[in-house]
Length: 423
Ligand code: UGA
Image (cartoon, rainbow, N blue to C red; front, side, top):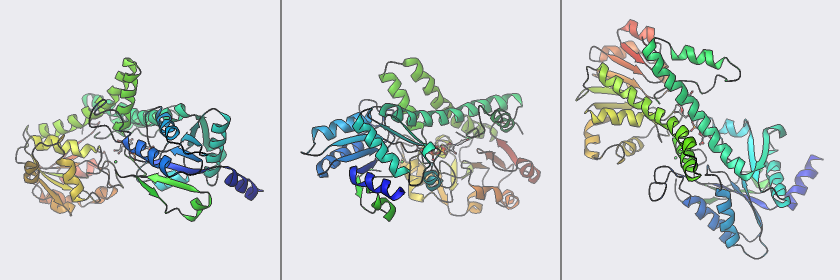
């Protein structure tokens, strides 16, 4: 029975091409710094139109502004070969870095948007069939293309908004004596709110490739993937994109609302850096500061939009000497981030101020302060007695991720400062 359903769909439906290209923020022209750059999407669509000799279902998997599917459809239509027909579906990606395979195999939901026409419904069903191989039916949601495109931006904006909300609370906590972890726990116990994404804290590839390295399961169901990178980072960029969309739609109040989510994110980084400077007697010039963690979150080497970049920038602006250790981030990547024109206008100064270490204990030696910027598990179990012994006194520890045992560290002699709680 199952085999029959599979084979009938296989024979009767066109093959599917997934477009999974990067959609970075535009760094030129109209919408610079906010709009998504769709040049890779466009070149993928043009390439599909050039090579397709049979009808195709083109699946937009990249995070795109609402109506990008329409642009893809227009490009395909304008370059269509005789006898070829296209359906364009929106099937946004919800993978998070560090858990991508689990998210793929056990997704919260799979979203498929398409034209509300008989052909569109057929294409939607064909893609449902693909996911039906490992995802249960009740987790596959279908809708119109625009709802699907907007849902992706909305989901990332809601996630960013939760972090900005709890980070805004953390500032109130520090001024009042409340503890943000306790507040988050109390708020998250409300089942209407839920307890995920409530952790206060300090605040992704060109050249399109048609990948024919399909695994046997995908081969069987004839899926082709046009890809660059399959996971992207959250996503100030997606919120910026949403802000830009609202402005283009002449919805200034809505744009301002989402812009504030970004502003709080920036404020949190600045606030944390200011606190470091203030605690170190209002000057960090020529002081050695160890930075633990440079990735934007644990279990990834990705540094895009990482809070650590900005903490390092603010400290370098004040002339601090940074000793950076991250278990996964490559030295080249780290230097590229810190020498980006938006971060430093003088690469030789970065060279002068930054030392990259392969050993966290060496990074902490002879420093005035240690700053935790990423929540790597290994940081929790370091020998902090040894670290304290090797640091200059008074030794400061700034826990930007609220992961360490603060009482124990204070017992060792550290001055501990964290987010959302006065110690
Ligand atoms: C995010 C979304 O979670 C994915 O669903 C989405 O598919 C993906 O963006 C995308 O659009 O590419 P990801 O970028 O891997 O995934 O990162 P998140 O897990 O969302 O974390 C983002 C940042 O928020 C990290 O720096 C993390 O440490 C921080 N965070 C997360 C907090 O500060 N507090 C929290 O409670 C949760």
